[in-house]
Length: 220
Image 1 (cartoon, rainbow, N blue to C red):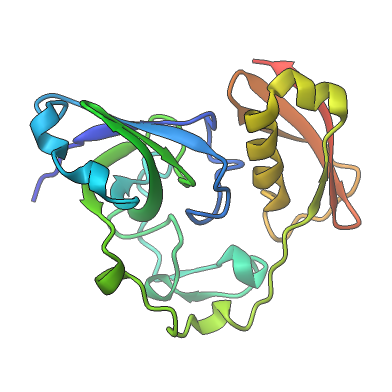
Image 2 (image 1 turned 180 degrees about the horizontal axis):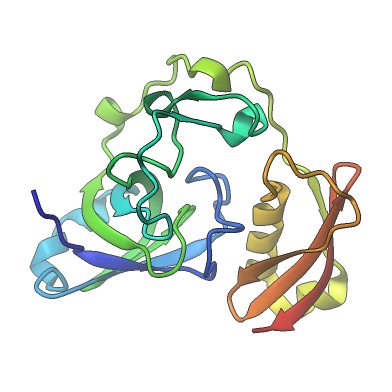
């Protein structure tokens, strides 16, 4: 079966580093689903505005040719323990397909305005389906090793002048992203300076004692 994109994603995050590891973890992060012809016609999304969330089926385009391993190392387990690829939500998959639930903020012909996505800029989208609460929500479901691996967001120290430069909504989204600690699980060097793309900026930060310290915003 050959599949082609029906849309492409637009996000302030330009690369893999800094993308949330799951959808919904950074609800303030905004993005756009831009449909391609012929799916950019109003008929293709007729009725979708009546839903609060939708599913995006998309491709891990930044991980080409990386789906041959039967096991992976989930970040939730610190990147040091292996589980089967089908027991994980790793981006390194046999067919390189991702599935994300995102909040619909606004629906217009040819474009969906969404929030909380875990997609980088330029990601190809192969299908869009409405999220249906009665079928898609299972509040009492077990979550395997995720249930046993406690995770808490870290504190983010974003200096006021930098927050003012970003603006209120973008500063809130950046705080949410950095609170997820985007570093690989095996890295814990408090002196290392990391860089993460966010809109027109390269965000420089350090992580020390469970806190993220934003050092600068450099125009890309």
